[in-house]
Length: 244
Ligand code: MN
Image (cartoon, rainbow, N blue to C red; front, side, top):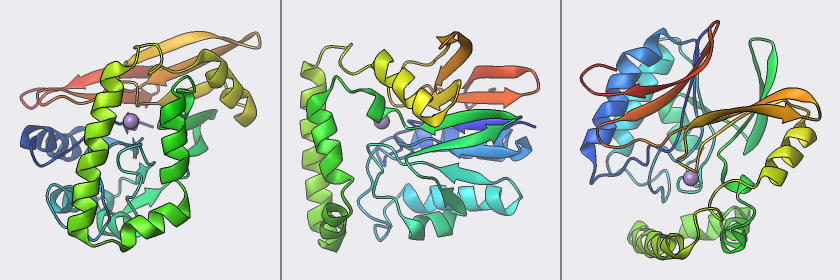
């Protein structure tokens, strides 16, 4: 069994190379996998499934080719693409996951998250998150005309960029206490998430038992990142357009 995990591609019209890297990955490595999990921030912004601007349609078609070829693809929302909905999921053949969920991976219980909820030191962001994950707020947002949503998304990204630039690096990393709390809550010794753009596999102990937390890497124009879990263990691998 080979299961692949990716996150934080942040696809956007201005960066076609990153989309090309994903398309190559979906045609090569992903085709021989047993399942692919996308743990959020596939897109840099998502203002509603009725927006047919690229790269949405191209990505949906490529995912559909993969899922119709027999590789199930699961998607969990990130802090950028939390408005991605059933319509896009149906077009792409994706199965939408809840914001936190436990899967069985080769007999082990593994918790999957985007990772933003682990950054509990970032109080401003957590307040913002509570607002935008509220179904009432989301329904109001999706009822606005597309042009208005595009403008609002631009403003949100700009204020996020400014806020992020002013925050200390440790505030934007995960809080270890929260990592342990959420793992105990779900009764797991294994966690996979993205969001922090600090790819690593952390091995340690939780309540005296071996515990592991894998952090997925973000994608750059010339390099992608994937976590491969198979009979040989868990490995973070780089992807490039030429080789990888
Ligand atoms: Mn994120």
